[in-house]
Length: 300
Image (cartoon, rainbow, N blue to C red):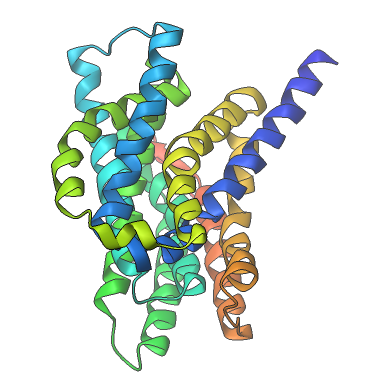
């Protein structure tokens, strides 16, 4: 019974993490209009670093080794620098529902990088499902961009790739130093380098930003950048990675829901239809068989 209770708690924490992540794009869309890309994209890490430093000191966490620092740098470049900055820039011109569809490819990108990092060879099913999901996203972007991809679309796709690599590297490193500790140390690595660019982009006009913008910025710093990761990684540790990770398929639909609730965006059936196709392709891809280099190949 204790094990069953632990698994249920893991699923609950996983759901909390996904809900928190789903609010990231809406919060970014609100905050970036008043604070700009640099402050929203990098400033959240500077603020989060204060909270993280307190937690690391109180828990007396051991410093990462030199070998672990290499992996942490990859995590920092993706989860702390690349993804926040690219999505902040994209949200200046794209609706949240648009971003939700493109970010739906993230689990597939993560699975792909995880396979390569583990020396696994993706099967035909993985590549076919990846192509279906990618083509659906590109068609969606072309449709909304009147026949051409916008730079913001390319930024979101780049964010998916870079965060997918970061997640895969972080998942591997979590086995050594613990789950939430990965993002915590990545934040501490990135924050010192962000102080100057964030400081140079601060203006007195920002003091007059509405309460909604300040709440959004604080949410991105405290929840999206750190606490959401704690819930997500803790959930997978307690409920099992394979089981809890399935909750992530709800994320694009939750993003679309929050876009209608908080930003009053109008959602079309076309958007929902593309989201369903992308999520379906992600499910197929993540469940595809793989073979290990040097071993007998598996066939689908």
